[in-house]
Length: 193
View 1 (spheres, rainbow, N blue to C red):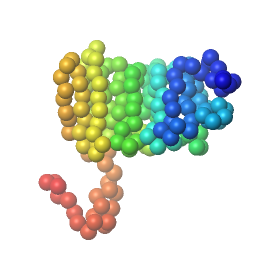
View 2 (tube, helix red, strand yellow):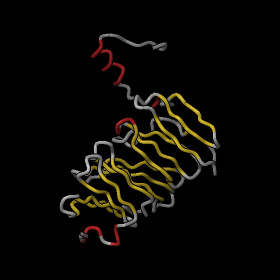
View 3 (tube, rainbow, N blue to C red):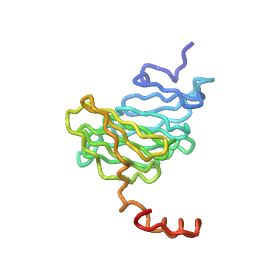
View 4 (tube, rainbow, N blue to C red):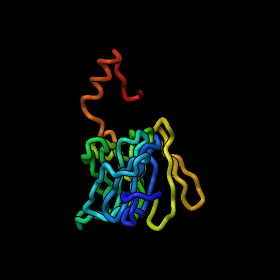
């Protein structure tokens, strides 16, 4: 049977949540969360840009939506939304339209790819980049994956697989993290680890 929540306006994309209790659907500039049992829409997220894609986080409590930004100064964007509160968590601005975005490492990282062939790694709660972009080249078809531990990034481009140590930018590591780690563990790491 059909329901009003599944009208033609919302048939661009559909995805089950990880627990199978809800569906994510997208229209031109809106993502909706629909209860699978009742078919009723209970949360919607309206964007100032046309959606390219949207996906659930591994926990099913957030969605990640991408598209070209409406602001000419920011050509591409990915937005993280919290489903329970309906609030925007982070906005990941790009120099070009975003062609792909995924949650990685059980939702602790976001990887994005833009139309120039740049791959970026982000913190999903702060929206801060965690590394400098990895540039694989414009007009190069490629895909990427990250291992579960978050220590290795793999890319495949032009028939070749490459693996990269995670290029975490030390400038993004907060100053308070070292003292906190020392207080908790009772030991200090030097430059050699």
